Image 1: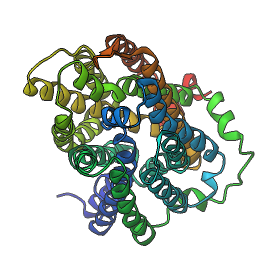
Image 2: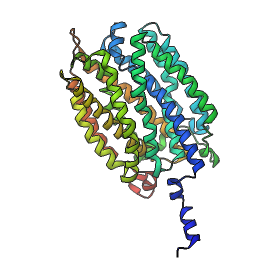
Image 3: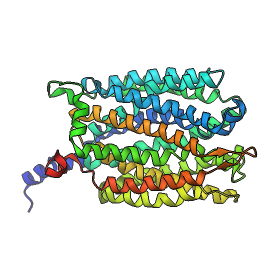
Length: 430
């Protein structure tokens, strides 16, 4: 007969407690993930809506692909710079307070986009939104990493990634409908209004996230954030993974809608279907990928989805006139596999630092991701060319560049180790 004390001690083991939290804690975790997903939803929507609006903005504002690429990258580059600056002080504060401060500023920037009357002021408004938006993603990931142990983190990241799916399913189609029905300004009004509600939820229901402050460890020189990264190859590899993967992703994303319209003969009014179908699929696949990554390993799952992503990347950047249902299958596959590789990647990267370093490191990581996104959009804009007939030329070259970067990300991901393993392996320690 089993010993009751032994059974009791077995379930008190920290590993099992992380897998099976008490019911009350589980409810709090679900509420926290819901609010953070809402933060990500509005944050992602603000960035995503620019890309499918590409054909409309280029026509109404009389701008070329290079100028449109600059409008997209203005947010990303500014966000990268602000996230980089934040890395030197965010670990000194409660993560909830930093998130709320950044989010309120982001909402103000979004409303600025809503009232921008021309291209120049739109770019300025994107810069303002990026200034605060750059800190949001890092804080969300740091809060999740502080709340969920490594054994459950990919599952939490998978749930968080459904915000991207919901933005695609509901947000982008609704935004495009509002833009077509009224004006391209109105989607930003809607995002900003929803952001006000989310800011109230953060203030009322997100608990203090200050465990990293409770140990009363002295804060050293702020530059230590950078020196720690440069002196730790494992962290450098994690940052390199983020940079390479995000560049491979966003070098092609901004020009999907223009190429569908110009190259595949796709109706501008049907662009929302791509996001609707792709987003609907990833609502179901993202949590499943997270569970699979926790069970089978983050790296093996990442490799599978990274390799699968090569297929739709090539197809999307080599489009020719084809039926609507074929385009939706290709774009749906693209959404699923690209989203699938992001879930384990975020878990891998978040596991290379201690909680006391996590806010700074994740801010640097977010900065590198945002800068990579901006640089990638500018590279894509410099390569592609819009003809007088509306065709997007040289998009295939962008696709081949993306494929090379995806291959490099697979190599890098295999060399990033969780801090628990790196600490016991001298080759990763220093």
